[in-house]
Length: 241
Image (cartoon, rainbow, N blue to C red; front, side, top):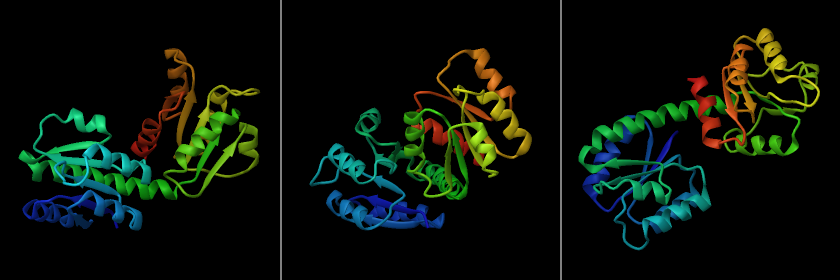
């Protein structure tokens, strides 16, 4: 079950947030100090943090930094009456909800979190193939994916190696520029063999003609090197919806 940790001093706000969260069948866990929150994070797998900023005992910036040390990908949403939301994003928060429109904004955010959870489940079940002959690039992609998927991830140095494996995958990440073959031809062959596969072309090129050609050969999307982690994961999850 999707677990949400709420940090707040006000009993009244605890009750409002709890009602919204539990209505979506998510698990609601609450506390009123950052210190207690950090203990919970070390003992329980949390999917989302909702927090106020006026918590005694620790600065919000220090708390966010501590959270990122525990789980760097854990989303943190600030609930505050401070309209200067930029300071929270600069501190490392992922989202901001105003207390003025708390219920409506929280419901919308929780709905998005629900979709995110569903995509995470789907993502973890998918078989992913990475085709890249650059060792450093391959390791970079694998490091990113390992944060989101625990199994069913395979890497290949060439299309020949991929097709010899006789394995069928749900998601293919294909480098366009390979040493001895064209990534475009690999994409075309994958598409002919598996019309339902998600194929994302990876390239260091920024030529618009090349990028459009990648799509013409059958890719669903493209991502440029150096790879942006959030963008890559968002592109994959968008195709799973």
